[in-house]
Length: 316
Image (cartoon, rainbow, N blue to C red; front, side):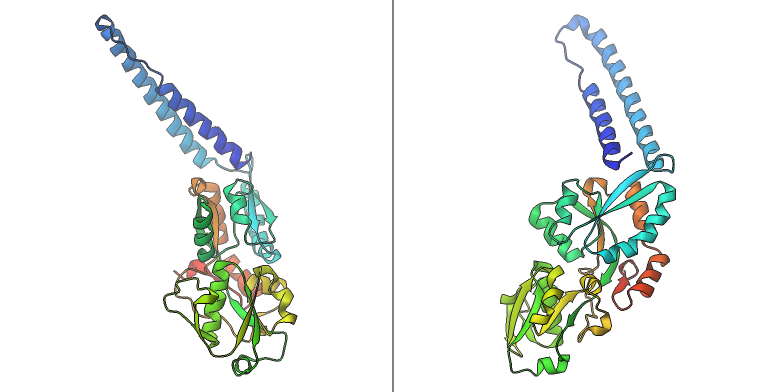
């Protein structure tokens, strides 16, 4: 049984109960008051019985939301093959319990939240809080984060002979590739600021823009491209600021970076699992989060993705 079909059935039952309790009419005849009173009493008892029945059904649904005999399928939106390597052991763990995970890969950050909001997928796991907050607010999506996954470093790379010191000493204009979406570009700019390339206006906020840069230590020309395409232009620029998941997909390691992101003031860049807000308390989804946030997942981070992934749920 799909989760969407199960919820559609439950919603139909609730709407039917509401319509039944709202059908009693009023009469103005004094001679029929006793009959009306009796009818009202019977209607109230029927409504109470229906309400109790619905409550019992809801409780039963919560307890039997999934089982090996009554499995459910959950479609998860991802944005990189690396995520499947993390999710596969969780998929194997949950299948015997009656939760079947299916992956839907997207090639751009701009699509998965829209797909989740419209019901094309059931949850997604690809973004950090800063991106999530901006994207949901900008587009009016009714989505909720139900658990943190990891924080993955955004680092500075080069295909040339630069070190961070030689880049900062350059008198030539440096071409620097950065992601072009608001939150990832803001994060890249803050990373470049921490490395010493320029200063950003203190009032710029969590996601500064290029126009917020006040003082340059070296001349810079920005090349703005989709986050998943930054590596593809690394040969054409001097430096490239690349999200960790795309760095991994491109065969880079954290040790290849000439400058590494290492400090986090809050949870803005913690990645998360998101669902539609109406499904935030779904026991199936809660079980998926529980299965994810384990030592087994931490071991995958440590063994397979050294230097990139840190378990965000352990950071407080």
